[in-house]
Image 1 (tube, helix red, strand yellow):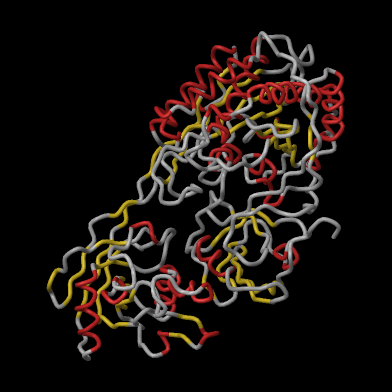
Image 2 (image 1 turned 90 degrees about the vertical axis):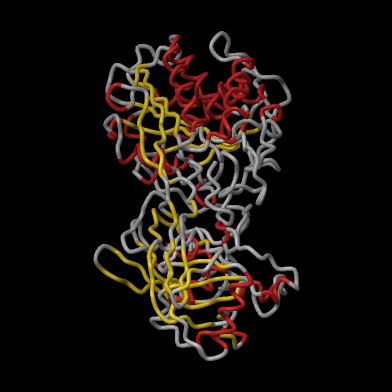
Length: 589
């Protein structure tokens, strides 16, 4: 399940009490042993966490395609294959960067992941710590003419490497660089001053200390070089500097895997699960600083294993409505952890006519069924869903399978953060099966031995029955219905102090920068302010937004009840929209 960065929304789980009895078997098509075998293969260390674009992801895609073929499915990828390939960006890497001062090449030069590639030449000026905190009377750029200059900036802040919480923002590297750019700087030279080393600061600035992308080149220098340059500036010198920053942004090909069980008519129900995960950690991991294989057994080898077994059942038996008028499209998505990229790519570039797809059922993290219940989200996106789920619930009870469906009321906060959202954004109703968060989520400890395979078998039974009910439903009952605002509290990991309510379009790369949105959460400040799908957010309050990191940095400074101006680009127009922050609704509101 995509985490949408370390501070993005997770979501509330609405649980119902469960049954205690063991689930019935779907033998010979779906078995506990086969579910376990799939998960153990996908979540083996050999796959190295299945990060999209990696060798482990490619091996997993081949494994799934072979399973689809054995199940008797027909290929539904590009050009008669099982696959649909698309390009993904891999983690950026430091290139060869340089700093010349008065014609002399400096040693130990590196850069930051957020740096713009390019060259800048001009006068070098020092802005100290580069702090900008008007509420405390701190604005280093008020006394420095940075326009057209290369700015020398200290890491950390006046309050040391570990300041009090109210001053922690002063050491934000992206904030420093952004403030320099807004003051007119053409490049930044960043380093740790030896004074900060005495207080426990780090000498070297890691390449990934400032992610995302900024609008000017940035290089980093070692403490002795930094101290010398700052001293020269303090003595009134105006050194001539040349900055050359190089950040490599490699790409790779990722693969969706698609197979179909055709029906007698053109219509299809798409059932899907993402099979990628986080590789060796890094961006998205909840174990920061720990380089270790993130096997993603629950997230989402569990959903993938159920998908494979359902494909075997539907491809090799007469299950379902016979004769079948509605076919089943089985889709294993890649690059979900990068922002739903695989499913979003398929929706924009479908390998079958998108109008044929009446609904989507998404399986993401179904390996830890807690208290005998599995959450079902987005049930309000089609009139057909609740009646179908009601039949499934009754059948589960009648067959004494130890599972209940905890059907969420309204939309899960943040939409649920998984591939069903790609279908909903295209106007296709979609359901989401999810067994819950846990302490191993997005950590190296999410391993195969911790899954509840009997619970997964029960989920497979429920989804299989649901597919039958959806085949029987009237076509007219699948018109997409906008989900209601979420009820209940929230479970989040975030830096933002307020609820904004936009849904970023992670697959978009708006020309000129900014953060493009795919929509807004119902009832949110963003919706009430009039933001629309496709809007590109350029500025939030006084903060220019180049990407989602700028956006989240901006939200950290606001409070409920405050009204700000949000600048958006809508088509060729630039709009100023007033937005007032208010708390997310809680139970009883």
